[in-house]
Image (cartoon, rainbow, N blue to C red; front, side, top):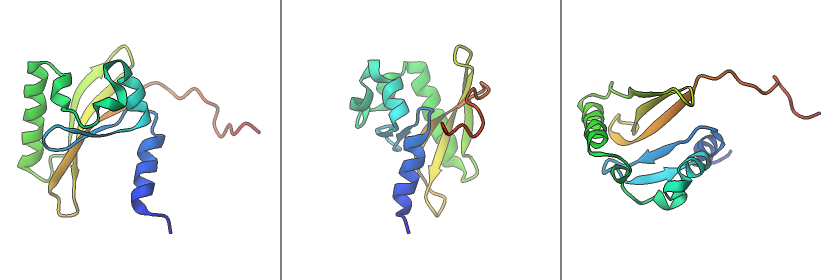
Length: 126
């Protein structure tokens, strides 16, 4: 049987949307390839190990901390809609990551594009 951690990582690595995972001190601990590419002009992969807060203005930092406090307040607080990006037609969320006991262990930013898929269904190049 495949290693479950490898499977989880593969899911993130294959995602076309940027995924940036931060620990509770706001340190970027993981960026999938889409995130590395998206944030390339700000350092790309070199951002891993750096504070997410350094990438935001004071107002955004306050909001990020407020969301993190809300995540900590209840095991049921797990998803916050944070932004609509009109240029890219996508919704952006902050998502709590919890261990098996429900304790908050990290968080990430989730991008959901609203554009209809343009590839043909089941087009496998045959």
